[in-house]
Figure 1 (tube, rainbow, N blue to C red):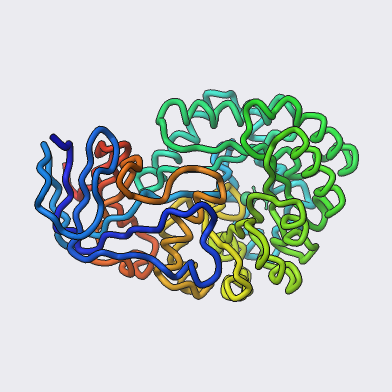
Figure 2: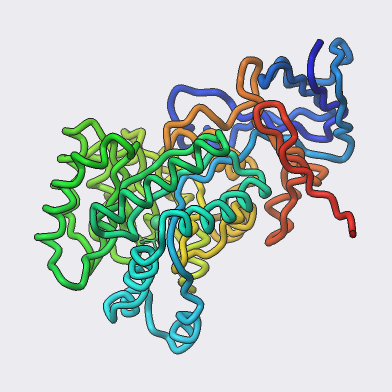
Length: 410
Ligand code: NIG
Ligand code: FE
């Protein structure tokens, strides 16, 4: 006997299982079944496709007027950190830029102070609350970076918190060491990058990836290359915060070093974009950050797709440049500002996001883990169109309904 059937689904979203990320025009190819059925047994998908009444199960969910998709993947977050930075809003209003705030010892530095001061349990409780919010919004795979410790002791503290969250909730999580996220005030970038390279040896047992913030006033291309090569030598795959603000050539470096992803890319060069054609590095675009930094120019998603690049969309959830962890909101910004179609967006937050962090997620075919979302939405376009609110009605993890967002009053 099966455990659960979802029947009469208005639209069932079925991203394609692939070895490699979807590239260029493939991103717009998405199977959507009207009047679909999903059958679950023992935490796995037994069937997902056209309507059938062949199966029986202990429980049924009525999918009338609902959309069902694989659970979402948030491929870039700074989930674990101390404190909050709402005082920066008035600086932003006065026109002080993100890099100026950082230069003055605020920004990332103020979160570093709060993170160092926080105990491991305090960090855990804060991150847990936000992880649960993400799960309530339909996300069941999360990449989580360190980067607010800027010393081995405190970076390891963040990574341990991230690991504990994964152990507690059993969802797909990847943990990224981002030691070179800013240059501590008492040192210089050359000395600090060498220290981070030395620390790679200690973090490689707990981290899945090594990441770096390559930006004007932070780390240079040469420093980033040195760090990425050292990480790869230790068997740690690499990621890079590249070309977020200035076009330093971070995308080119990511592709040369075969990074699993290059993230941000708002200022990526034409040369870098052209190189995407022959690369499986996933361009992880973070339009919620561009929105929150109040920039007029967004990443050139269409240009990247024209160059047959692979792109994914993520939140970049962090206390400074993107304070939301509602990936649905970022899907709306992607529609409006990156000019992506709804089908492209769904692939970008499921299968391609999964490739960017190397998790087996983003599809619901027979045999897959039953990680899916029943959306309060009549079709797949409804969700990015209606921005800023949570459309997830039921979130199903390993076959069990773990979230049931009903509007019941006490
Ligand atoms: O991805 N760009 C660097 N790091 C984060 C922001 C971190 C912060 O401001 O606290 C980002 O945008
Ligand atoms: Fe980031």
